[in-house]
Image (cartoon, rainbow, N blue to C red):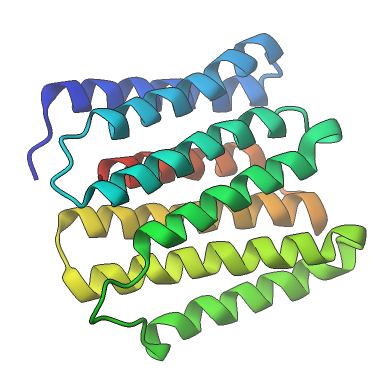
Amino acid sequence: MTMPASTIALSLAAMAGAALAAWSEAAKRRRVHLAAKPLATILIIVIAALAPAPVPPVYKTLVLAGLLFSLVGDIALMFPAKWFTAGLAAFLAAQVLYILAFRPSPGHSLSLGTALPFMLYGLLMFFILAPGLGALKIPVFVYIAAITLMAAFAAGRYIAIGGTKPMLAFAGAILFLVSDSVLAYDRFARKIGPARILVLGTYFPAQLLIALSV
C-alpha cells in the first residue's frame, strides 16, 4: 500500500502530538496536555476523512464516527474525577461503531477458534478488575465485552479477506485492547508506574492504524 505524502505528513504530525500528550501528562504540564491530546486525535480523524476510500463507504463512515466518539472520550477522560463515566460511555459507543465496521461480511462468520482467545482474555480481565470496580461492575463488563468483540471481529476480518488495510485494522484493534487493559488495571487493580505513557503510547498508534485502514 502506497500512502500519499499528505497522509504520511499527517500521520507524523499526529504521532508528534501523541508524544507531546504523553510527555506533558508525565511532566504534569496540564495546559500542554489539554491541547496536545485532542489535537492528536483530530489529526487522526482528518487522516480517515481524507482517505480516498476504496473500501465500502459505510466502513469509512463507521470508522469516522468511532474516531469522533473517541475524541469525546479523550476530552472526558482528561477530567476523570467528573467525567469518567461519560468517557467510558463515549468509548463504548466508539467500540460499537468499530464492531459494526469490522463485523463479518455476508458469507463469512467469526470462527470459535478466532473468538475464543479474546473471550477468555476478556473474562480474565474482568475477574482481575472486579474486586475494585464497585458500582462500575456492569458498565465495565459491558465495555470489556465490546472491546474484545471488536478485536475478535478485526481478527476475523483480516483472516477472512487478508490485505494490508484489514491487517492495519487488526493491529490497531490489538493495540486498543492493550491500551484499555493497562488503563483499567492501573485504575481499578494496581497502580503501574508508567501506566499513562503505556496507555497513550498504545492508544494513539491504535487509532492511527484504524484510520489508515480506511
